[in-house]
Each structure stands twice: as structure tokens, then as C-alpha cells.
Image 1 (cartoon, one colour):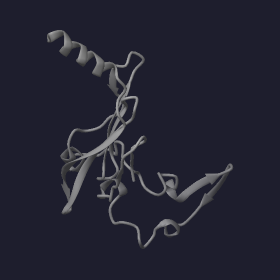
Image 2 (image 1 turned 90 degrees about the vertical axis):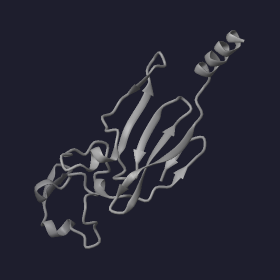
Image 3 (image 1 turned 30 degrees about the vertical axis):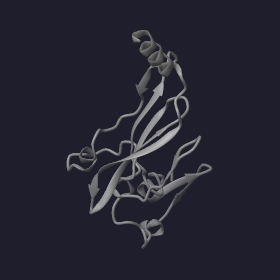
Image 4 (image 1 turned 60 degrees about the vertical axis):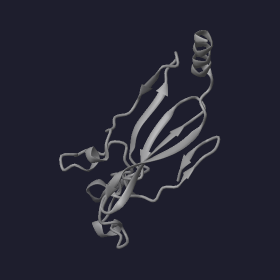
Length: 148
């Protein structure tokens, strides 16, 4: 019986992973629920992303020998991302311009353009940075799980 259990465990260890997406409640911000989604592909790669700021909290990928390794920086709890001492933007959605309009200027094709700040301030823009908003997230399961 013991040999059968060991063989079953070995078979599970070498069988391909199932692609899937799951969600767990991860806390709340501004009265809105925050979830942590885990997406896994058939190769066993795993990405954890939250609807708070679209933050990628973890990516684990197999190395050449199949051992899983964490390949991005991230925190384990929502409180780490919302604390007053947090000053980073680890894995977050960064916004419309991604700092491409630093000091009210940008370059296209080697030509520098200077614009007024009013040119890229929108009245419908959120009052908080994108990485501090709770987004609506829709998990899509299947062969290639997605978070929309």
C-alpha cells in the first residue's frame, strides 16, 4: 500500500499542471473588497495579481530542472501595499503616461515637444494614482486563464 501511495505522489509530481484561475478575499480599501487572483498555466507558472492597483504580487516560474522560483518582488499582504510607509510601485498599473511626460516634455523621433500641464490633465481622471484604486476584475477560466 505504501508503494502505491509513493507511486501516486510521483505521478502527480511529473504530470503537467492544470491551467486555472482562482480568487481569495484579500481585504478591503475605501469600503471596496480586494481580491487576490492566482493564474496558473499548463507549465506550472503562477502569477498572483490583485484588483487593488492591478498589482502583480508574485510570479513563480519553473527553472530548467522544474523547480519553481519567485521572479518578482512583492509583498504578502494588502496592508503592506496600503501602509503609510509604503513608497514603491511594485508590480502596479502605473497609469496613462507611464512617466513619459516628465517635466512637461517628451520626444518623438528625436524631436522634443514641450507642453503645458493642462494638456494632459483630464477632468475625468481618478483622484488617486491608478495603483491605489480598487479595480473591477473579471476572471476568465480556460486553457489560458485571464484576468480582465
